[in-house]
Length: 90
Length: 404
Image (spheres, helix red, strand yellow):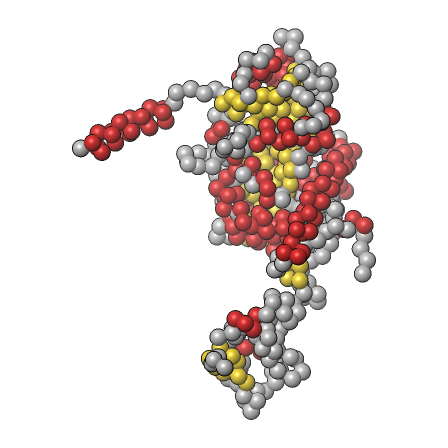
């Protein structure tokens, strides 16, 4: 990567939208999304809407290190394939 | 085009000439005329810009930041309590490193409720990272709006710029001024070329979490932007003179400074009034000049060290106060000279809440300061007011009330 000399020293709070850019947000989770593969039609809306980018595009597997349990995927799912289930003490 | 207009309307015309593309704004006296005229120009098809009416100044500044992040040339205007309400977003704008120009029509902060001029509003935002310039004439209002975009959009700066003009003295008085058209301005100020912008092809988040391990460097980088602005300000003023033939100074401006034994140091319209004071003092054989601080951020450190060398004294005029200390300009001037020049300085606090500051008053205090008759800090034109009387009356009434 190279830039003009004029921008050397220019540092700001910028980040790319990648999994884990906000830390281990999985620790926040109270409700866990549970997917019913029989109802899922692979429309990828959950992948589009997930704010933590913690749903894999190819397998639709959820990375629970970063899934914060916000439930947006469950709300957006057009077939009702995702249920939010309260996390229990293990 | 020569026009006869108020300072506020000249701001709107200059923003149009500078090809501003997005204007998020919220009305507040004494700034409202600016955004009213911008709205009119857009409705009449004379200005090609998006006007975003927002629900508060906090949102105005947030929209200003966002508009600039999309790569648009953004503009806003505010005053006093509106600027104070923006405070959090002012830090955000500077910290995110977006160029933008916002005009602040300098007005006192209440209480006591007051719509008239002083510099407390912008001085209170001194440490937000914004560049700050103070203008002293109608033509300088026009020319500085145009210069401001050259400065804020420079890739070595990329910090937002606050252009300060004095309420009513400049904002509501009519004066003739030359407003160059868009084509003339485009030769001096080409379209905004962003270093980066929000683009779905390359999604990024601005203003995200920065941990202690990285934070200090982002702040050091802001100071580097401020330092770089010094030469950019000078270049913008010099090239403006080459294209338009007008000069209002760069980091500082001066009047009869060269041979002066004593200098008045001031900002804004008080500096313009001080020129008349200097003329009067010169007529009385007193060798006085004016050093006008134009840019307050970045502060003209080198210019002050050079221009104050060998003077017999300074009278620094503040239209603001840092409570528990002294006038802010006085602090900065002394800090710039410390360890470099030994020049006796006196501080004069005048013009708060719009009180008139006449050239006679300035000349009188300059003479007293030079003759050693002033203490270090003088609250100028101080007298028993109606506020004293009412406070005393109410205190007496309550004394009786609480005794029964």
